[in-house]
Length: 175
Image (cartoon, rainbow, N blue to C red; front, side, top):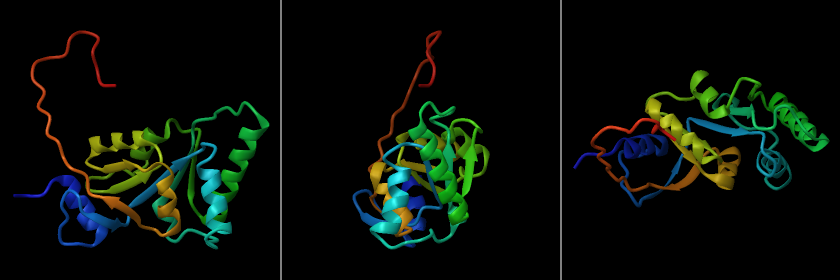
């Protein structure tokens, strides 16, 4: 039996000839994305330095940070988060996308969504990049692993086929 597109993408990212559902692998994402959300990016930046001794990410071109959720800022705490995010991106040479729109969509517009790419983010909505042939996986706090080790541990998911038939009723659409 052949491989699914998910298996093919993850095998390439892991540097393996093939993988199957259930395999536990270490895979290097093509792109690591995050956005301005308290308890995530601010914590990652701090943990990288204080807990892991990592001053800068390797290959900064693989990373993209979006300021898109708390715009405009409503509190001094949110402004502090944005300033810290801007500073970290500048120090690491990581591109910052600010006031460009919702990060998941901007990710596609700026080239993070390419056919066959493996992209991780802490938000599960990144899976929308699948419409471009990209494997986008939301990993919650585990995406810190991509910032620290450059690879992520992942269990190759099973694939379920769903066949839809018929037509949508008026007013019914995606999401």
